[in-house]
Length: 95
Image (cartoon, rainbow, N blue to C red):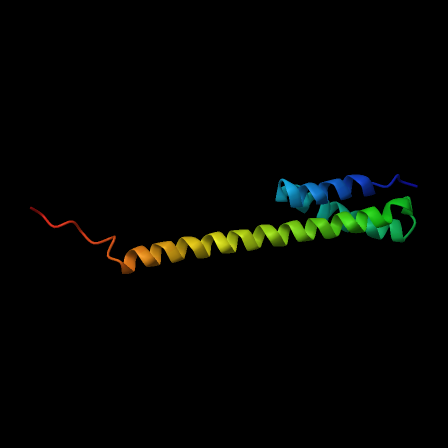
């Protein structure tokens, strides 16, 4: 029987939320691979709760990352739109 990686998955999921969403993606993928093995008893099922929690944290980190990107793009479009409507991009007349 393989040893579980539940603690590693949980740590990666938490790091995904706190520091870097890449860690969350890695935790999510590892959780997807290990949870079925734990449920079929080919891997030590002791870390099943940790693996599920890490997978959920990884999913949350990816969702928060995507929302952050959407908000950033929306803010950028809003600023450009406001500047364009105020005439900030008009050509400077020749003197």
